[in-house]
Length: 213
Image 1 (cartoon, rainbow, N blue to C red):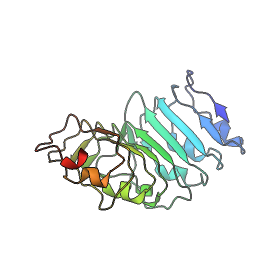
Image 2 (tube, one colour; image 1 turned 180 degrees about the vertical axis):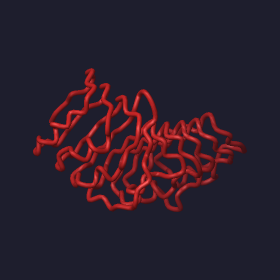
Image 3 (cartoon, rainbow, N blue to C red; image 1 turned 180 degrees about the horizontal axis):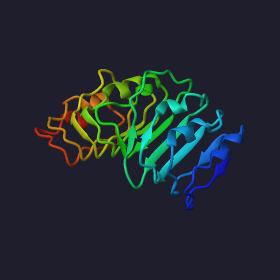
């Protein structure tokens, strides 16, 4: 395990690729910038935890740079100075199954990272502040039956559709979007374990569903 968080590191530490047994790498809250995809690609393949939150990234990123991280279960990435541009890329099938994913300050717009289609073990997803457009990705909830929390606040979502089956989701935050709709009457039936729901700063109308009582 290597924790270098809360420092003032500026240059990408490419030498970390030599630590072949490294399982946990925490580099959040530094001032790192540079070729993010090349850096991630060169990190040890046995990484299980990788956090690059709150750095100075401002450029392109290929999610396929994670392709050789076969044991990865937790991935966190955000920038505190600009937006990270997710590059369009051909489909690829990851050999890992994430449990926690946190992506913030990305330019994703209408396209979620394609590799998420192959993820089925997620318990926590934070995709806030990413300029996401279009409907809420219901499929992401349906594909991950263990999902407990999903945060998609501060995007540009326009529509909320619920899954077709009962789900154990406990936290749903879609605040500060552009959803102009009524809240589905059966939301309390679909999400019977929901304990925190933030729908503020949207354009919801109509009545509060009786199933929430």
